[in-house]
Length: 182
Image (cartoon, rainbow, N blue to C red; front, top):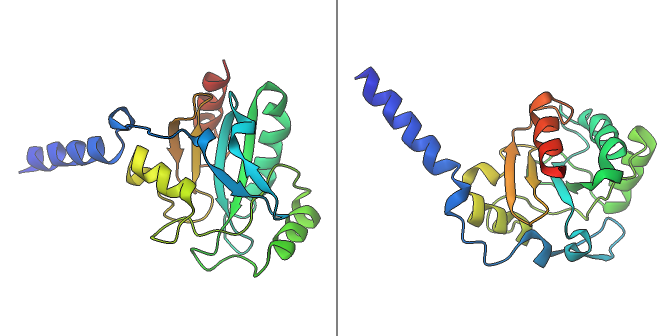
């Protein structure tokens, strides 16, 4: 019985995170999103860059990760990394307006990496980016909580995802970023 459970677990893991089966009718760089200032960001402007997409929130227990996301941005932006924060109310832990989010990030964490407008990141009302991620990478691309991370390669395809409790400066994340930048 125990062997059956182990086999079942591995089969489930195979189907949950199997990026090789993705069709990718669109790449990440074919999509668009509004900045926190309301300007349209055509993601094709990040073509050939590696992007760490993170759904963020002001009132989350992981909010201190903003500090490490800023360090990551400052360390790797000249090497081709874009850190992009997507404020989200999907978990009821975000401020009400883009202006409040922007002020919070600038005052408390001195954030200067790109932030988007507030969006849903899961469910039927999620932003097109998150629908694209789920369609092409499976359920592991769907945020289970705030500060879920999606690493997108310079080819516009998802490389890996990281749970909210995985710190942006962890060996696991840094290793994947450095590998992707080379």
